[in-house]
Length: 254
Picture 1: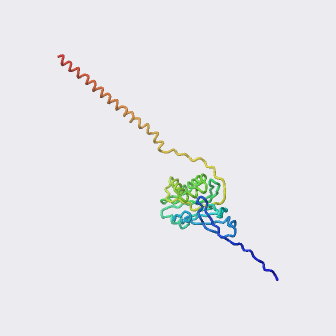
Picture 2: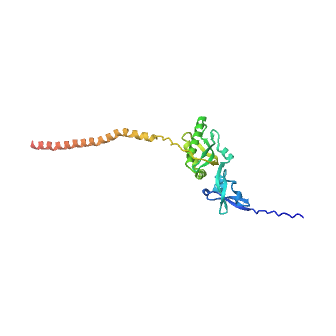
Picture 3: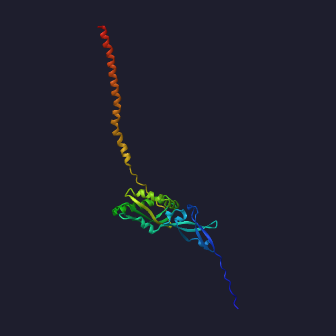
């Protein structure tokens, strides 16, 4: 009789997945695997509200990639972030212009991203203004991320610091009510670009400061002349005072 073959079944177990250090190694979830090495390379996507505890961030999803094992936990790195399409559509209102863009960019630490910014103007405007906003936003993002690593960029996005600074820069061309990064994704590695020096614009205050001394000279001269007039008046009084005793002396001699 044929002998029955015994099958060896590996016992699986749950392994915890934690976020990177920039999110204080927050708990992301668990995965059922036979060996922890089997989970390396997998992706996990969670709502940013789960990590930060902020309900306003529930419409933003962040993706992580499992990179390795440390202290029995699966360690991850940021792979991308996305604002849900339903939330993006609610940001746009009537009589406003929406400006979208998509391009590749390299961060300071050599991470190549495919980033998609979005701007919404305060009022309806022309296509030429929208083109200028798109070009300005692209230049701003290239310069900003060439000086910033990926982790700092993610933290600034989470705190809305990056969006506010970008909106202030774009408002020099046309007022922007909303400035958001719809999504970004790490697609590889690259070399950060070498940035040309930014053009220095001479502020208007400096021009006015040069013109002010010429206008203030007459005022200073008139101020200097006033004490002289007072001194002359005092001299006149002293001369008159010196003449009065002489007149009294003449009267006495008579």
